[in-house]
Length: 124
Image (tube, rainbow, N blue to C red; front, side, top):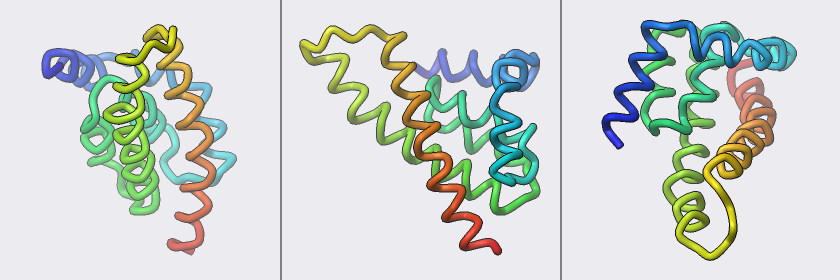
């Protein structure tokens, strides 16, 4: 698992792959008035590959509100992938890894507006 996280970190830092993959997310983040949306977008997707990568990607973001949002979404992703995701994969539920990833993305998209609303309330 460490190797996967290292590979994804290298891809994130040295290639534009995750920046390109998260381009559709940038207008949504801007609509929610999240500062530095372009820098924050990849952090929401890499949480599937490794639990600590969103925090690593958020270290260069100046906005405290954006770092708060990334941290909260990362915690939600960690809870899903370590608890629920593991149970689903080990159960008899006929769910493939691709379907698990789709659920991961949907959970992220559902929790993002809630966490953003809380962040706007805290950092107004």
